[in-house]
Length: 318
View (cartoon, rainbow, N blue to C red):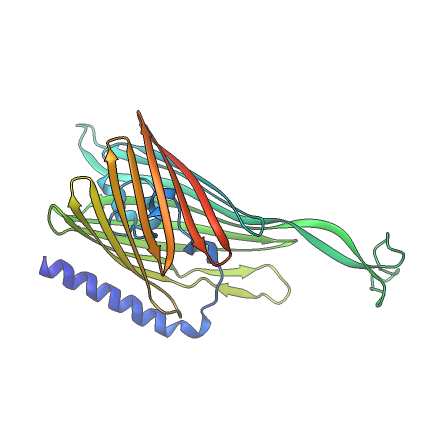
């Protein structure tokens, strides 16, 4: 165990050094990538790095996928304040050899975040026509006319692979393709996530995830502008206090920002119903689940700066 902890510490230290080195170029592109997926995890204050035991582990810590015993699909939808629309879906498939022995888990996931109905405004000569002359120039001082509406859309599609590396140690990786579309322009990039998970004992699990590695959105504009997506490093621990009660905590560090503490608890009242509570850097989160056969339905509430956030998700095992 000491060797594993030492390895996790050295990896985290290396990533921290990399984050410092690239701090000057770090921006806030891809902010939606820090919002999290799955109402179950979000109800626990996003403290899910070490717990990561369902198909949404592909986002939180891909190593957790290797612990799945059944293939599983997850879906989430959220209508957020300020007309923000947020969706996630994925499918994780348990891979088996000819003898039926599990030899890993592969997953495909997609996230989308956007704001619709953004007005494209132009100056107008008479309140109806665009304020352009024969040369395509604008006439200053005239009325503003809404010429059209457009959408700001960000998407993240990624494939995952995870497997058991040793008796208690798991590893996973994501290969990602990000795209941002704004009006008539767009930007895209490839990136990587890495995850590690260690089962210290029957009650305690440790996890480490390193997300958004090497992601730079290059815009197809005349200026050739680019936005760096800040890397996120998270170390987490989960403790099974009782057979039906799990406690979890994460230390989350986004590049060029202060570290944050996420914490949460999950309590299964019955085999089919659960309650959750958490704190995401001081913001209260609540959640609940209901199981029906191979389905699980989740709900989460979060008290956020931009207003209350309600998210609904569902998962199904195959």
